[in-house]
Amino acid sequence: MLLNIVDTHAHLDMPEFDIDRETVIRRAFECGVSTINTIGINLESCQRAVELAEKYQGIVSSVGFHPQETDAVNKKDVDKLAELAQHPRVVAMVRWG
Image 1 (tube, rainbow, N blue to C red):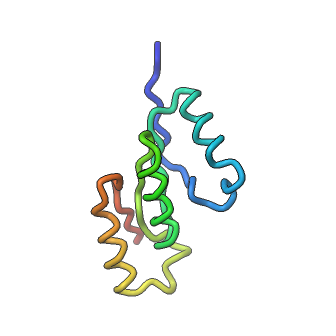
Image 2: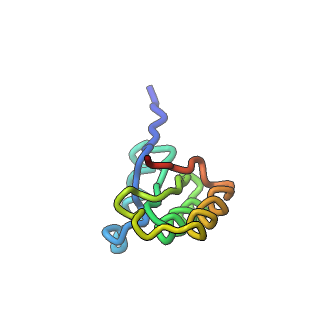
Image 3: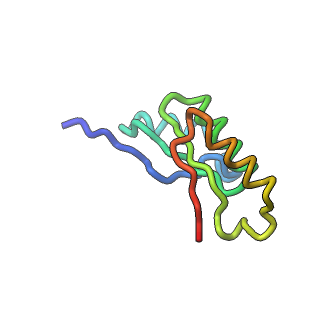
């Protein structure tokens, strides 16, 4: 039986993947993962996550501010995040607290 595997929580935009991101993504798809939801944790991370979703057919994105990233968030940031959430490759906007 062929399974449709969905990775519901990845952070493919993180710097830890800079040296082998393409390989990690390719291996996931080769191993049967059909969809990866890569999740941004701040504005910059969310933008990178959306860019990955644009680049790869099997990647979608969720955007939001991780609790550890909220100290400096202001209304302009929230407005920008809401704008980014309208992107067709964004499947969720995460709200904490």
